Length: 163
Image 1: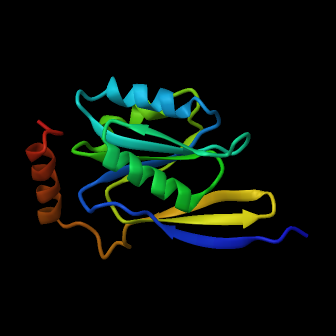
Image 2: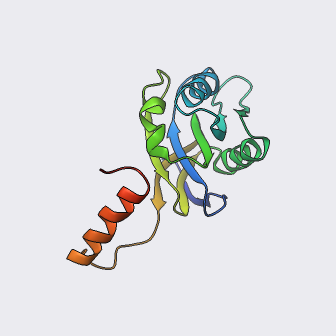
């Protein structure tokens, strides 16, 4: 019988920061995601960290902003699950870069892309740690009204995503 422990790890970031968390499979992940981000948005501010699951088993990190890179590394170290990566973004939405990140050859999948508070659910066995999923934000409280729908459409227009 394999014994398993469950852990919950709260991602540390400032409220206005966005993040993308996913799983990858190769040491070149950091370089390739870095290139995808800087070629998607001019002057983008981000930090990326990747948990290497074999070999030296280090948290590999890089970015265009030292503070964001350190924050990404701190979060990756806290989650400490094989081949996971985290990108901390400032001044840009995940929607601006998500397809570029998903198209990186090493990326296997995305757990979340959000500005919400995130808790990562991690399983640990004698073989290592893996992400089971994430809790991204709070539960809903109702269904949008006509007024809520108008507000949503106005917001999207205001921030440049509609009309």
